Length: 265
Image (spheres, rainbow, N blue to C red):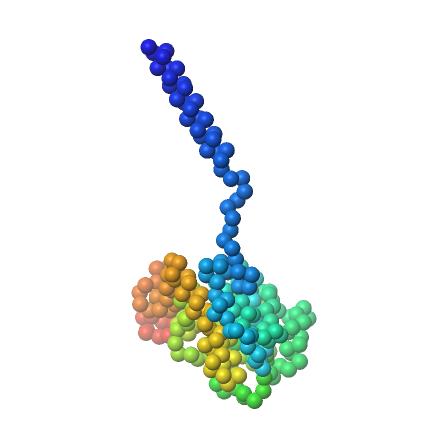
C-alpha cells in the first residue's frame, strides 16, 4: 500500500509541475502595452487637457521665453507645455539648460539687443512690481521653469540673464496648482506666472482665464484619479502640519512670529 500511495504522490507532483510550467509558458514575452498618449500634450488620453486649450492660439505682442531646467521636461505634470500650445507661433520659446549665456544661446543673444524691453520674472530686492511697467511697448518676458531651488541655481549660474529687468508678481492669493507643493502661499506655477504677466502687459484680463483653463482641468483630472490636494510648505509649517525637520533660522522666526518666506524659497 505504501508503494501505491508513493506512486500516487509522484503523479500528483508531476501534475503540479506541469501546471506551473504551462502557466509560465503562457506569460507574455512582450512588456505590457503603455497607455495611449495624446500627440499634443503627451498626457494619457483619459486625462488629456487639449480640449481646454483656446480654439485659436493667442496672438500677443509680447514674446515669452521659458528657460527650462532639464529635469522639468521629465515631469508629467509640467505646465510650460500649456503655454507652448496656447500661444501663437513664435510667441513662446522654450530653451532647455542649467546655465544660460549669450554666446551659447541664440535666443538670448536676440533678446539682449533690447535689454530695456526684456523682463525676468524673478523675486529679488531690486525687482519691480509688474503693475508699474510701461504698457505702451511690447516686452520679452523671461521665466525660469523649475523648482525654486533649481530656479535659484540657474539664476546664480547665469550672470547674463541677471542684467535683465527683474519683475515680481504680488497676487495676494495661493496658486491653483494644488497637485504640487509650493514653497510659499504666493509661489505660482509657470503657466500662472505667464498668465498673470501677459494679462497685464497685453491689457487683456481674459488671457489669464484662457491660459489657466487647461491647468484647472489638469488638476481636476489628477484629483479625480487619486491625487491629493497639496498645501504650501509655508502653510504646513505655520499650522504645525509639516512633518519634516525645519532649520534653526525658521524656528527662530516662528518664535518671534516673524515672516519665514525668504527662508523657505
